[in-house]
Amino acid sequence: MIPFLDLKALNAQYRAELIAACTRVIDSGWYIQGNECKAFEKEFAEYCGTKYAIGVANGLDALILILRAYKELGIMSDGDEVIVPSNTYIATILAISLNNLVPVLVEPELDTYLIDPSKIEEKITSRTKAIMPVHLYGQTCEMDKINEIAKKYNLKVIEDSAQSHGAYFGDKRSGNLGDASGFSFYPGKNLGALGDGGAVTTNDDELAQAIRALGNYGSHKKYENLYKGINSRLDEMQAALLRVKLRYLDEEIQKRREIASYYLENIKNENIILPIVRANNNHVWHLFVIRTKNRDALQKYLLENGIQTLIHYPIPPHKQKAYSEWNSQSYPISEQIHKEVLSLPISGVQSLEDTMKIVKIINDFN
Ligand SMILES: *Cc1c(COP(=O)(O)O)cnc(C)c1O
Image (cartoon, rainbow, N blue to C red; front, side, top):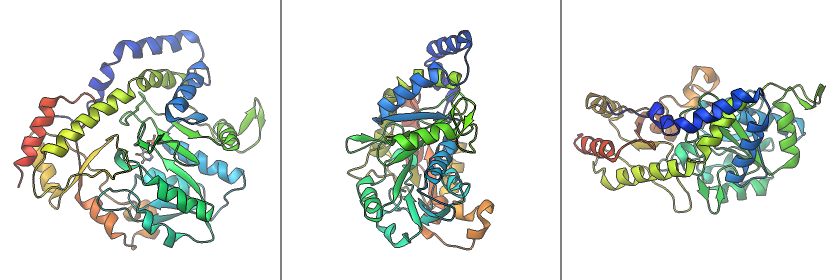
């Protein structure tokens, strides 16, 4: 069986260094908010090109804390609206709802799966405070257009970079393309911890300070609390492991690009639509997502031929029970995408032999 993603093999590449990192943490006697987290924050900020990176417990918390900080700073308040793509992982939308803000869904473009900048302006009202583009599957959104709209209406731009570590738009990286950005280090992400982890990046001093305090019980000084905060911190063990993996991230991305190029050049099947990358955008191929009318049949056929695939995602957010108030609404492009997408195996440890086998089997599908 060719697995969708072999996490064990992936981490085994760095086994000795990961063990050394664990040992260093164990022997330090310091497990929360210590030097490893501080060093990772510095290294990750440098990687993204931002002034700050703040370690948090996971990607959802990163997004929640950004919005919460804007509320504490008086920039947003209950009932304000945040524009978000109608096809994203549910976490992006949960972060908005959980802050008593209102998610306003905007359809994606069918061919890139990314929020359609030409459909944003019609959704802006006097209560709109932010746009949250999601660099879905690893391709950066059209940030020039999105930032221009944000500037015109005085909106914050909050990137969901959970799938796009290292991706560029122009000469800047994901995490440095708006006012603030949330990252996830869930094990399967391009930069994955060996557990949960996340970070916020920003160049905004005030926002960074507020987020740092909010993630630590609202405390800016020991035993003094400025806000009713939460506990959301990146622990020393995960930070130490992430420091190892960050050093190999660009290599990992390069390997993913090689597999993606091979797929793009060699998958030739008229029933299958391949992903496209827009001229100005940049793709780190967190997921290689194809589309076909016969998605379920293709998935079954591939499995019968020893290839594991996944669907990102099977149910659009507005059709989830959690958002029953939206269930009767219609977002046809998003619905079509959810019906037709299939993610092929891709990772830094996938052999050329396996990639060639996948292509051959897909090309024989009819
Ligand atoms: C993974 C993911 C998140 C959430 O990250 P967690 O670390 O799992 O909380 C948010 N947004 C998107 C687009 C994601 O893919």
